[in-house]
Length: 273
Image (cartoon, rainbow, N blue to C red; front, side):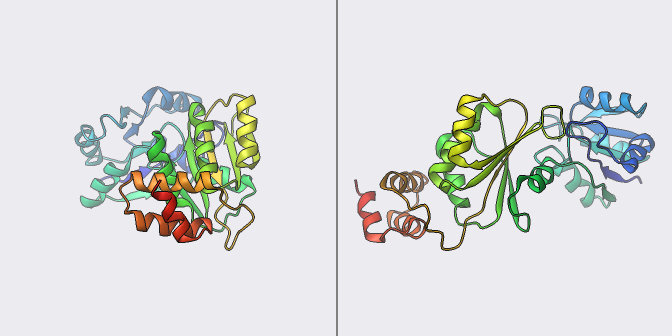
C-alpha cells in the first residue's frame, strides 16, 4: 500500500517549491493534478517525468478508482493548480476516502495565498478565519457577511476581479467601514497590496480596474467600537438581509439592534415598514 501525499505547488513564482516536494513529485508513481497542463509546466521546469492523471471538481468522484488502483502499487501525490490542495481546491473527498481505507495521508508544508496575504497585510495575525469564495448572489453575499459581523478575527476570502468592487460595497454596508486589504497576484511579477478602509479600496478599484488573482482581507470586529455608528440605511439593509433569509422579525430586530447600537424597539418599528 502506498501513501497519499498532499503536495503544495507555487502560487505564482515557480521557485517557491520545497526540495521535499520536488522529491515526492519525482518518486511518486502517479500525480493526481487539478489541471495537467498547468502541472506539466512545473514538471518541465524541474525535469520531472512522473505520470499524470487529472483530478478536478468535475471528475473527482469518477477518478477515485484510478487513484486507489495506483495507491495499491505505490505512492500518489495530489497537487492543485496552485497552492495547497484542499484549500478551495479539489481534494477533500479523496483524502476522506483514503483515510477511510486506512491509507496513510501525509501533508507537505508549502505555498498558500491565505498565509502569504495575511502576514503581509498589516492586519492582526493571532486569529484569522478563511471563508473561501464568498457567494456570488447579492442576497446570499450579504447574509454570509452578516454572520461575520461580530467575529474579532481577521477575515480572509478569495475573490474574482470582476466581483471585487461589488463585494467591497456589500462588505462596507454590512461590516462597516473597517480596515481591509486587497492582495493581488501574490508572488508574481505584478504583486500588489492595497491597504486602507473599505471605502478607500472601493474608490481605488473604481478608478483602477482590478486584474489577476485576489485575496481579500478584512479587519475583525473591535470590542465596544462606536467610532462608526450605523445610519438608518445600514440598519434597514441589515434587517432586510435577515428577513429575506426567513429569520423571525423579533429575532432579526434584536440581532441588528445589538450589532448597530440602536434601540431594539426602534429597529423593530423599522422592520414593519
